[in-house]
Length: 105
Image (tube, rainbow, N blue to C red; front, top):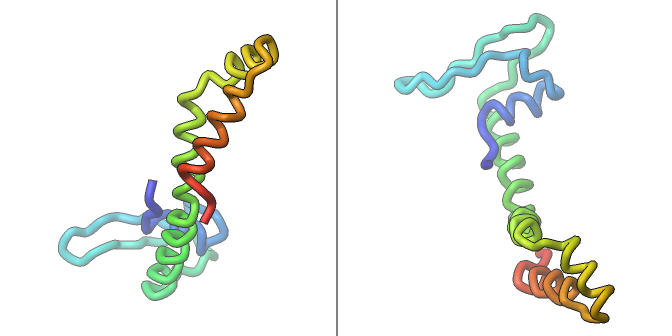
């Protein structure tokens, strides 16, 4: 899931998601209203910068998300058990193939 304006605001306000209310105003862009007093509203520039940073972090983890999806398709416990019983390396080979197809950057 790609980062949103709400994620950027949450990150900038120290994780206090309920400090602001964010609404998409189709004519003017985003409306950000203070919900909790004492928390400073981030500037539009701060939000844009944080959104870019969060997107960069998200993009850098593409390989990990892809690997996890592939790992989840494997019946790893069964594969490991069969490898122990049959003296094979099916599980290790499958994991190595996924890592080779989706290397860390």
